[in-house]
Length: 302
Image (cartoon, rainbow, N blue to C red):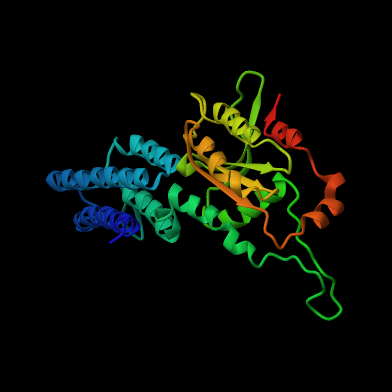
């Protein structure tokens, strides 16, 4: 079994353990007389099973990297500690905290992708972008009778951002786009795409013809200091560079430079597809394109 298979099996096993603990607590509690006193030894057993279920749920959320959800569960447990065996009636007896935990389990199981996608899988999806671009719309003539030839231009960083958002948002329910992070002095950083559950920032750069590749490295290094600090909840960065100049001979050096920046866990460089004619794209959109300095400035507001 590969690493991903082992991970999936561990997640499935942990979910089963939580449900088993909840079921054990409920099998005891469901025997109680709704109108009479509870049996102290049985109540102690129920408390133990519910406390165990909380610990197992928190371990599961740590495995999945769902830090915000983990904080919510920990807050709920602070209330549950007053009486893990608290119960109520709605047609039948129910254990209050078992119902709370089961809600979280149902959400996790309804989003199976959360348990199998990690930072390495996201990086692999981004590296596979060229495969999808093989069928990118760039028509020299209309494909249907009465239609018009269409060309989907990618002219600047915001177009690349939209492309990556299209790919990642269905896979990652908590993904957010253009997020304002805690200020650093008088600067207000804004990250391109963030995945809070993974404490991950995906930062996008657009490499233009004649632009020095070192500008990209300096830009990511600057972003790193603004995005990852004592006030930030993020710990890792994936740098994604769209090479509009197709300088593939420089990719290895650029990638190596980006990987040496602290907290950059992956560096992905994708060239403009050959199907996109540089001469056509430049002539049609040259005036409307923001400069590299303008794009970098948009990442930081003073």
